[in-house]
Length: 390
Image 1 (cartoon, rainbow, N blue to C red):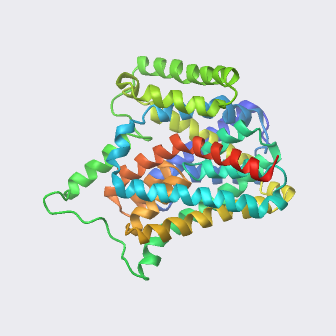
Image 2 (tube, one colour):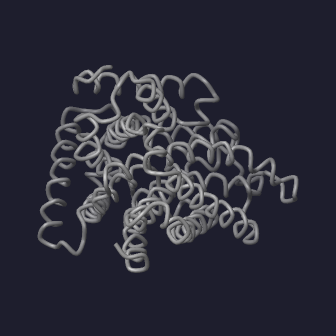
């Protein structure tokens, strides 16, 4: 088994490289996204005993590593672009976030007997992670001081459920269309419908603006500014969390990064989202490595049932209420992935299903999930603490 922390980091870097290459080259992996492929590869390596389930490398990535990644990704969030997502995609995302909240509450009430006194923490963490992706799970786990065994069991359950839900969202528009409603893009007039070349340009532009490529070449000055802002924000949020303990560090981190992102010079830094995404992919690969499946059985299957309950109720709410609100099945599938897997998953699903016009709106609401998930999860977690005790 590889145990040296530097060697473990090299393995995780190789996992991320492999996941990115598979996503780029092969359509099935593109539909899963590099994030999910990296988690699964990390999980495979640790469960085969090639790398350990615990390592100082993982502790670094789950702490300052992912925190800096979150900051750099949030620096790309122009809150005005959320409006460009349109009321339909925003509506779908809002319904999905509400469904996640209901699922987190029901899951906590249903499975607290199996999970134990920390059930309220999982309610908050699952509410956060299923309103914007796995990064929020780690941030809220640190805020709630979730025990190591429960944290890793939660990650293992999340990996399995997230993979299954991606498959559901890929097939749901077709399967549900048999019941009526069809699976088509929103109608547009001939005068406003983009030509194929324009759709392709929109697709490329959406990627340039987000997680995979920079709008312009990255300069040394960009990297220097990213280091100062990223590390400085992590430090400042930690100090503010100590001075105002009523608000945890993760909320300060999110708030400071979002405020800085509204400054054009900061938001214009080349490559911030790309570097942030890379750090998040390393973190997610380490999450996979920490997800030794045996942890689920050690802690108990209640954690798996908990995660499954949250996502199942989310799905019933978003596809049920979404259809009543006359939202398209494709829009709902992309919005659901923005909630469950974050912007990368929303982009991957929209691309895999050919929803070219929905890629940029999906990324916009996915980034919104990154921004709001920590607030949402913290609120629900504390509410469930009052209900369940602990």
